[in-house]
Image (cartoon, rainbow, N blue to C red; front, top):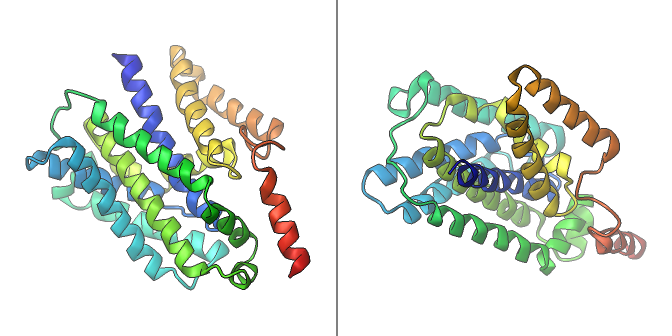
Length: 281
């Protein structure tokens, strides 16, 4: 039972890692993935309590976060770089403050109005389907366009890529992945605390992508799996858990600064594609 629960949590965190990865692949650092996941979690829990079947409730959570991500994209459309990261960080903190001070959303104690889940099958089906969708995106021509977009907006537009629309799609897709993850987690854990909306949790999620590697989707998958399982293994000795987790992160960043799943095999066409584009531009 514990192994099934841990595996489901790993899958939920993999979705969060992919949610951080998609905007990063397009050159944007989205620092409010935790808040988007929280929106999806609460929306799914409310829908499930109202009588919506669990699979549809999970979809409701993903849709709610995708809508929130779209609104956020409208607000930050003209921003980029560090300014964009700070704005999304502030948006996440505003959402956390609203949740903390709203009793109907659980207040400071967290939202816990959920129904018991008797089967994890709907979560596995939708979660794995979302991962497959990201994999198909990686194999598509759109991923190559995003690779160029990350290097230069002007270069991407010269090749016929609508930079603004492409980034909007990436942010909305990231919101949907985060919302699905939040919907899974609130039904697995039974509560969604305000901390999960804040900066600390969003940084943990970004670590999934950065520690695993942001060149390929395998990076956040690998990073999320390792950084979720390792703290559970270190739980045997709580006194050294945080020390061991910090040592693991330090070791990863020192030995594999480009990420665990990054190497000359991971994306051989990306550098050559950008180099050819720059040479011809």
